[in-house]
Structure formats: structure tokens, C-alpha cells
Length: 370
Image 1 (spheres, rainbow, N blue to C red):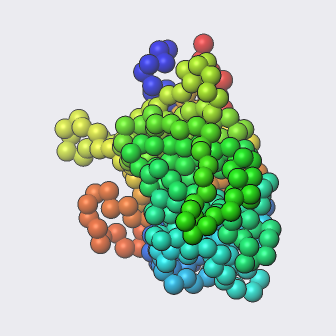
Image 2: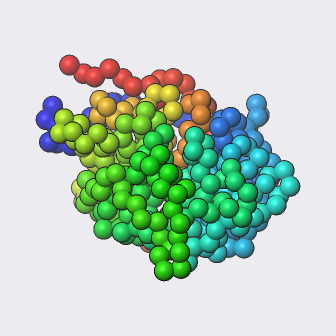
Image 3: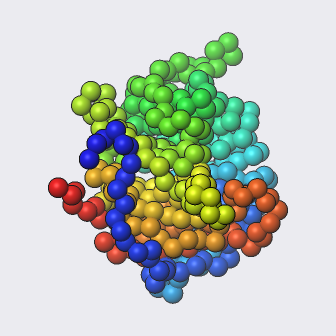
């Protein structure tokens, strides 16, 4: 097979029926902005434009709402912190907040000059990273006292759209197809030793790599591989790219992009309707990844052999978020109206959350064809 075709070969599996899947009750009343599992794999949170963060527990009978935390403005992202009693959130009020789930106490640990739209937490380095539409990143050292948690601010070369952490890297996908890769250890060291001033408030630190996205249109999401070898990114134009960190010619020759989340038009014209790929998530055990699109489909891919392993049944609206549990046993799927059909204001009641209990065949790589 020629690598220049840049397409995945799909296995001819029938679409799965939701036999091992259940729907969550007490879901947000507005669009879900993010969904994340806790490290135990039995709790997950969802942030929403309805100004709440929701915390759910998975039980033998399904999933139940354990807690909901109100904010002043729509919440654009939330992540788990040092343990399962702490979460961090960011939103349209520009603030980054630490929330103690035991007491429901909220503490503002930093503020941007525009929406704080994406967060990432590193347990290895005990840092929280927040990115904002003001084209900055704030670095917070969470093991210090509250007044010392905001270490420094990095000015980005473009507006960020998505961020992701691996064990040693931070990937920032931005406007104009720009993508920066930072060495996390060097990044944290620079943030810790920097001394910002009124004249020079920003951290001076160069990325380990400056890249241009392999995708032709705006990046929608980025997710790092669990083996710390590379990342996948997706665009608004129904494509996913898979790339490796290693700058050697041999490794860079392996990168590719492929079309996905495209559906034939209902008028029989033979034209495909192209949907954005809104969400990406890697399986923590097998290293395969799931993509969720505006077409309402979730697919699982083997990025090494370039095959689609599985596609699930169509969900009732656009896929807003995905995440695997830490043991790979569950996949949580957030569904929200994406208005891809141009009918904003319609489709009330389509905000839903599904949890799928996975069997190994759904996410395990398949042997490459000879």
C-alpha cells in the first residue's frame, strides 16, 4: 500500500449496537465543553456552558451525579488535580479556579485577559497549565501555597485552540496551523526560575519544536500518545493527522493524515458532507485512539497499522468530548448539539452522556495485513 494515499483502510466490521453501553442521567442543560475521567477510572467530570462542573461516579447500576459546582460564567474546561478531591476549571470569566470537592471551596489561582479555554495537569511535575484566547499560557505550581501557585505566563505566537500533555511533552495547537512542542521538564524549570517584572511580564522560553500542522484547515483537537512518542491532531475539515516527536527523517517519514467523519449527502448527489473532528482520546493500554465527529459517530483507530478497528452506532448529536478510563475499561462520550446543519436553536434535549464498557477487541490493535 502506498503511503502517499494517506488513508486508513477500514475493517469491514458492522456498526456496534449499544449492548455494553448506558446513558447517564442528570446531565448538563447546555453544551458540554469537556469530559474527563479521574485516575481511578470510576469517576468522571463534565464541564458545561450552563456554568456548572458535574462530577459523576460509575457504579454497578450505571453512573450517578455526585456533585455539581456552579461558576460565574460558562465553563470551557475542567481537569482533575493532585487527587480526586481537587479539580481545576477555566471559563469565560477569564479565571482559573481550584475547587476542593470536599468543601466546594473555590479559589482563583490566576486570571487571563480573555477566556481560559483549555487546561492540562501534570501529576509528575505537579503543575497546571491553562491556555487562553488572549494567546497566553499560565503555568501554576500546585504543590505550593495558594498565593504562590501562579508561576509565570508564556506569550504564544498564535491563538491556542487545543493543548495536550504527555509524560515529557506539552503540545499546543494554534491558529494559522501553528503547532509548538515543549520539553516539559525544561518548561517547568524555566517557569520556576523566571522572575517576571512590570517591564517584562512574560516568560522567555522557546519551544523544543515549532511545527506547521499537516492538516490544511483549522485544528480542532490534539492528543498525545500514551507512550510519549507523538500525537494525533484533528481539523474542522474531517481529517486526522498522526505525527511523531522524533525529528529524524526516518520518524518524520511515518507521519500521515487521513479523511474521516464524512457522510454522503441525503439528496443522492454523491457529494460527501464533511464534519469537524471535535474530539480525540488515546487508549491508555493499547495506544489506539478514538475520534468523535460532528456527524455523531465515534470511531476507534490503530494509528500504527493505519486501520479503523471499529465504529459505533450513530449518536443523537455531535460528539463534544471523549475520554478513556485509566485502565481502558470504559469510554465516556459527551454528546451536544454542534449546529453543523446550520439549524441553531433546534435540537433541544440532545445534550447527553454515554458510558461504554469496553471489551478488548474494541480497542486492541489488529495485525497488519501482508
